[in-house]
Length: 272
Image (cartoon, rainbow, N blue to C red; front, side, top):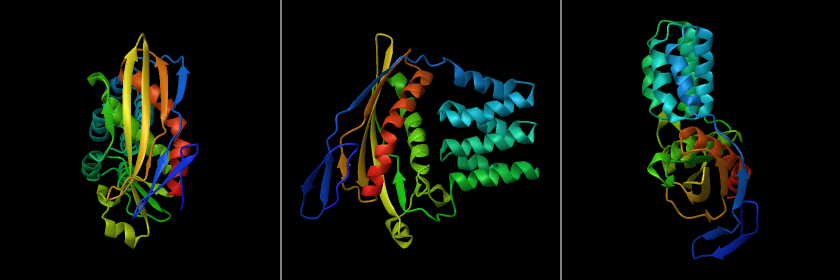
């Protein structure tokens, strides 16, 4: 019987047809005195749309892709369609792919009609990253669609921010993908044909604000995909950062929370 744990001892629970691995680990609490720069994403969006210097717009497009912030999506689509400089348009295409939002596929496919060879090559590269056609070396597919949010309405952006950060952490392991061909979900038959194991990574995202501190808690749970049988539960991380409840502070908080759990999540995934 194999077991897995997020950095701690695993409890083995036998069932008739499967093994349930209950991960019982004390939640990590990290107190950080971090003041997120308010308006950083909105400032980059403004520069991308309006700055007369293409080098400034280019930098903004590149940085926005790293922010994993859905507020940047419309600005990057605008730059991809309308910017006069092909370098900026190419950077916008790659940043859209890096964010991993499936709705970017439509804008990228439309951009293939461009006559500029540099932009077209970057768009093709971005589409290949967003909706991969080749899956060589991939052994595991992880679906991140079933994330749950608990907290004030103003913090709902946390789900998109957490999903993007977890996707990056998982895919950096090299043999894991969170995306599938044509930006669709794989069927059980498709996974079996390619000898790829499928999992749901459900994450409960909790956000709270109190006394000038924003708290974010991530609790990961693995299920089989597509049948959704429970495989692991428990563990996670809770982080507190100083600041008001806005997307920049939440993003900073989640950066630390994802860093706290990513190695254990990846190790658990490879033990299942």
